Length: 383
Image (spheres, rainbow, N blue to C red):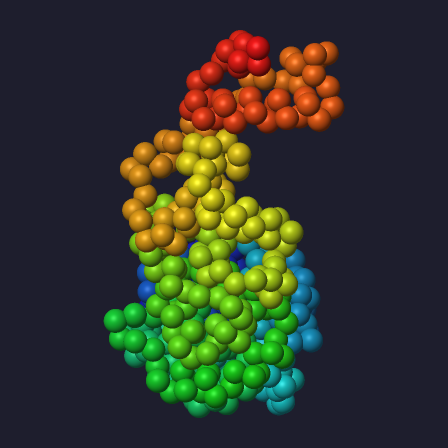
């Protein structure tokens, strides 16, 4: 079996492979680029495994005139950049010791050893520079069935890095077959190791959750997280009942992980997931607007088109109601509206708090009119 996609045949990528293999080193694409190529999914990152040491990779790159950056040299990774395209080159590794968050690794010379330290069978499929697939652990059978399965014993893999419990659900959301359900051994091992999730940094948890929620339909995976006790462990107080309705209401609209996160409810999500200030502010805005009564046009005016759409879809999901076919049109009308009255229009007759109250009332009247009242009509209404 071979993979055959444009990225594989790029001159820059082939030049990197040739440089690393110049003195006889083994060179294999691995991980997401191989998995996605086999599934017909888009490929973004170029990960390459080799038995050459990082020092050898650096020397080989210099000889070939390829820019090399020691991005993770202590863990065996050097990034080679050709024609602006980064290629992560990592020496075959094997785990020596783990503490549930990070591993102490040693370099290896055997591709099977490198494969056994990975998380899921579908991520342990390799390909040579000519596209020939190499499958040391039989991951193709699982990939073909879209079955997310841990390599070896699920409990051992999880205890090596507890983040793998979250990655299991994320990979299932993106690549799994929901009709086949979830691997029972994996769910049992995850449920038996919930305490280990507390050792993870909130940044890592947040990154995994946002990636999961960005999947086409994360609802089955999040429901499985709830059933296994994971959701309550990492996001206490959340409830996923509105998530599936929200995904249905979104239809073909662009996905928003934050919108879906808002559907889970809960408190202190900013701290729990280490959200940025901008993400936390957007989350707060749409959650507040979703439980109020302002219409789509008003929200478009007050929040902008994106936040208004998020709030209206979230409201419909929480209330289990359909959305109006004119939703985007109404939001766009409000987002484009410009309040025609300025503070100086009311001076000098009104000042201070009275000026503020008048402006607020005029704006409310203007919004209620569907943004139709003119500046002159609004000013006349003051008497």
